[in-house]
Image (cartoon, rainbow, N blue to C red; front, side, top):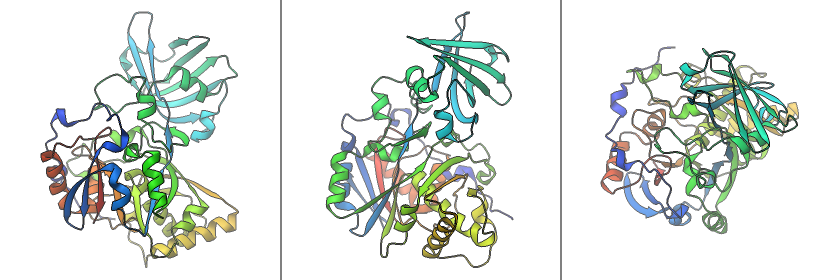
Length: 398
């Protein structure tokens, strides 16, 4: 399989430091919203979104919930060690199982000030009646074994007591109490993300109610966003970048909603978009191998195949598989990498924030919009939009 070379420098722009939003606005839905509709750009407020969506829209939201995945330990010498959870290893690689584990849990982590923490050294953090212990078992792979007292508490309870909000690295400040609410969507439900699906941070109950009152359909799926979403692309040929893997969970009713006739499918955020597109490629895998696992490799969509199914046929293939296996939900992993040359199969619109230069998210957006992405970003810079996770929004209808 020969992939095209993509020059990373074709997907960069100058983002001044002062344009990165360090704090969210006091009112979520008061953010600016750039609307790109078939080549035309206009400027609105996010609160106006319900009036700007086509009547036949169905919105797909990512309902993942951010966990307080950052621990700060102090050594007896005074050195600080920061431990950031990436993915569980033991007793289960499944997030839901890892969070409910009692007494102990092992995770792959990124570690700040690693040179001050040697294998076998136990760190501890005490919060009121809780004591958390961390043992570095493999500094090459960042494996940390956690235990705690009282031992009858779940790891989720330990996180709430001892963890802090994992703000993105470009928000150069410490997490504050207000971030626990604001770095979370109002519809967050299933805990497991270490980064927020930030396109959803602008939604309020008021906006959601107005969307529903206009007869616009909504549905929810889950992609547990990993810290890999912040990794910059460092390869001159962007195609050579190694994508991170993320867990996805999709209910049977969501598959059925993809069969609704005449609906314009709009993803709320790049995570929802990657989930929906991954679902299509799972159907392609099932055509090739009926018992195939729901694991989408980063380059699978670029593999030469025969006749591809329509979106409707893809949904029917997955539904038939679920019914045969008696499943009500799908649990899988995706590393899908969307870059120029990819053809979108499911999504017809996108609500998203403004992304970092030279990032996989900007590559995805450029693939969806085409060369007009430069016009959109220059217009946002000219109009003083706020960028990145706590920044302003856009509605993109190519």
